[in-house]
Image 1 (tube, rainbow, N blue to C red):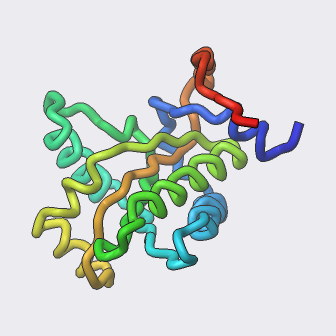
Image 2 (cartoon, rainbow, N blue to C red):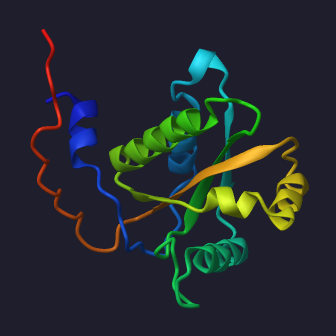
Length: 175
């Protein structure tokens, strides 16, 4: 089987990570895969903020937990030591589609490198706040950005989950 198709079929969302930080070169390869995602009209409207700082990860987790309505102390990133935040130019009509492709590429790249990943929402709500807009500015990110998602990445703690059975009647041929 083709390696790309195999990765697509085998990748799963991981909900338990080891605390060990992935190698920087692996994170860079994952980010690079995201940067090579298809984008509408070649605009490359999405950017990636790689967060590996534990204190900032705790803050992101707590804020994401609050937005999600979970009990205080729940970690929506499941202990992942790295979170790759995808944002897209708020003025670009295809921002959500472009950013979604970046997320998909990064999750497949993580899997291909033996790492786990999961897409965590609520980036839009976080980066709509003045607090997070100021954070972006402090990181050197200028402009108006919409949060697309958080790609939590790390070494898998446990087994890769089995795939759910594929639903019937999802493909229709018109010949």
